[in-house]
Picture 1 (cartoon, rainbow, N blue to C red):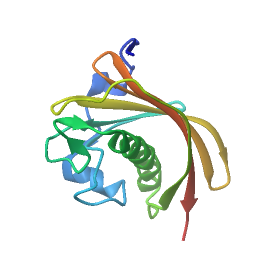
Picture 2: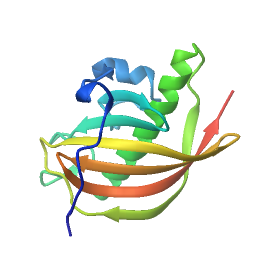
Picture 3: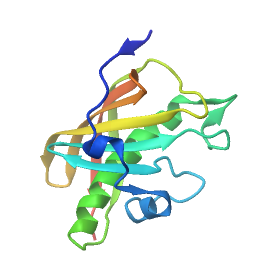
Picture 4: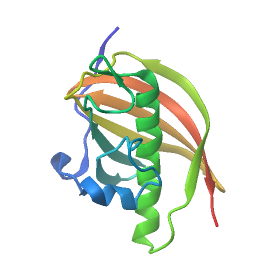
Length: 155
């Protein structure tokens, strides 16, 4: 099943705010499990992150990014948002943990070479717990969506 939606409206016409090695300042993950390579910024309650799928990706099998890779990409997209907010305040970036994944719908596995764009929307924040809604697409095709509960571990 494929769903088509309009292009996600990312800030700056999808020009990366942070990319490459600088993304590592926003997330705790390191190679080989880095699943974001671009952070496009925050607009209201939403933030935007991206990943270009490569054949050497840990979660890529037979030229396709597998389900676990999409979920990890969504989680790291949310982590990049938190990392961005904390670095803007010159504070240490906290670790985050997935508490739950709900209403997960995977419509299509992306091929190597595909550019994923994920929109993270904050639904609710209570203390160190954040509930997000995520939509991931390639070009104009929605490939995955879910809700995720994330717990922050602050020092």
